[in-house]
Image (tube, rainbow, N blue to C red):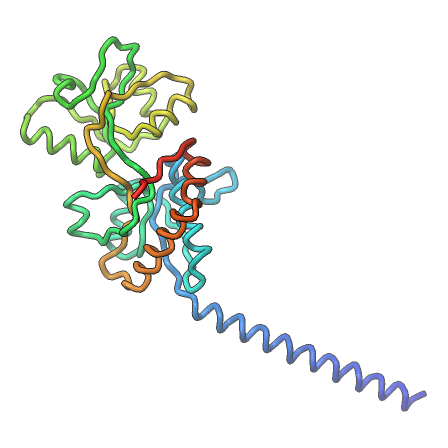
Length: 273
C-alpha cells in the first residue's frame, strides 16, 4: 500500500510539473506575441454622434471609431487604442505625439498639411453645405446669401477655415459664432434663431433631423467639396502609415466601409474613388 501510494504521489507530481512546464511555455509565447505588437494611440472625439463618442458603457463607438477598429482587425502587428477629446484637442494631441494617429472626420486644408501627414484613402464624403432652419423665412445657398447673418462653426474645423477665408476677401459679410457645441446645442441654436446658419455635410443634417425631429435644410449646392481622411503625426513610422492605407483601401473594396457608413450614417457616404 505504501509503495503504491508513493508511486501514485510521484505520478501526480510528475503530471503537475509537466502541466506547469506547458503553462510556462504558453505564457512566454503570449508575452513574446505581446511584445511584438506595436501600440498606436488614436486621437478621436468623445461626444460627437455619429462619428466618435462614448456609448452607455463608456466604450468608444461611432463611424470613425468603427473604421479604426476594422483596420485594427486586419493589422495583427498593431494594437489601436483611443484617446478621446474635443475636436481642437485631438489635433493638439496629435501634434504633441500624445497620439500617433487621429480619426475625426478630417478634411484636407493647407494648415494641417504643414503639421501632419494625411492618409491616402478617403473614407467619407464631406461636401459642405450651408444648413439652416427654413421656418425662419430665409434660404441660404452660398456665402453671399449670408450677408449680415450669424453663422456657427466649430472651433478649428475646416468649415471654420473656409468661412474665415471668405471673410478675408469679404470683410464683415457675416459674423462667425465659434464654439464646441454638441449636436443638440447646434440644433437649438438654429431653431431658436441664436444663429442663422451653420456649415455641415448632408448626412449630418439628415442625422439632426432624424434625432431631434426637426426639418433643417441645406443649400442647393455644396460650398466646398472634400473627403475625410485619417491623420498621422509627422514622426509616425511610415510602415504604420502604409499599413493603415493598405488596410483601409481593402476595407473599402470589400464593402466593409460601406456597411459601416450605412450603420452609423444611415446611407452610403463612402467616396467612390
